Image 1 (cartoon, helix red, strand yellow):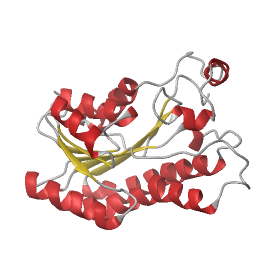
Image 2 (image 1 turned 135 degrees about the vertical axis):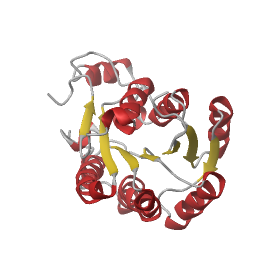
Image 3 (image 1 turned 180 degrees about the vertical axis):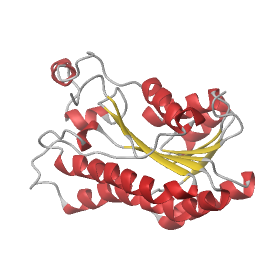
Length: 246
């Protein structure tokens, strides 16, 4: 029960890596708020883990504020935040991605971290404690062609993590990130462009351990970084990637 009695928000927590993190946190004693655009899916998981589902668009500051206000009204505090919500784009040359898609990628993958910080950091400062975890990507460390703007958004997230960690450490707030490699989640097809055995084999050939990341892998890493076991760990972008970035 590493997270016993903790109040945790997981954005994009209804599916994929977010669902793995939600389930692990709940198993370790946390009360989990599943903040997701897909309220139906979030409600299903909330019933499974005895959590709470809240519909939120993390790219919209007003939506984030309403979600935070609801959590505070129900629980009175927020101990852990996992900024997991994210989107990708179909592999394509960097000069061909349309501006609308570019803007949405940075709104969801980058501005969302800002939006969450605006409303949650003051709560954690007042409490004198807190843990924030940003779900970045191996693409932010070792980018590959044709996913340039997605990779850039995750590189931004890693830099933001380090900056937040330095600034918030005096307030008792730790900030870390995890860098997953591709996982068998709804985003996998987006990254590959097409989901075929040949394309999967191509992706797997870049991962020394020889398999994709799983939601359980992310849940385990996230739980450690958000628990008291990691009380001396801040500003780290942990690669949970089977050796992909070596």
